[in-house]
Image (cartoon, rainbow, N blue to C red):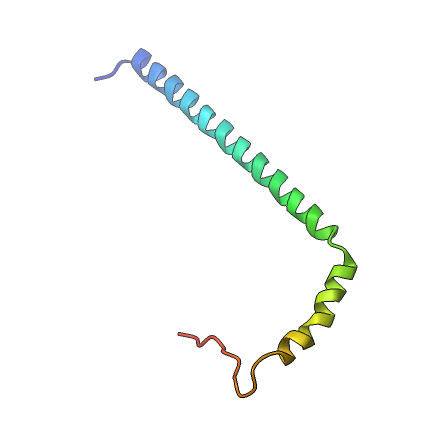
Length: 77
């Protein structure tokens, strides 16, 4: 049977391990936050003209499809 000192040492050890895991989790969350903010900044900076270009290009891409072909649609399971 463990004595009180042994329980205290075990609890302190478990606390140190948990603290390290929380620090790792905090670092991972900070990294994820920075990456998401970077992604949001890039999306916000997308030139509006580029989006207009793709909207204007869509009919040409659609018209260039071979005659008699059908567009494929996903079928739900």
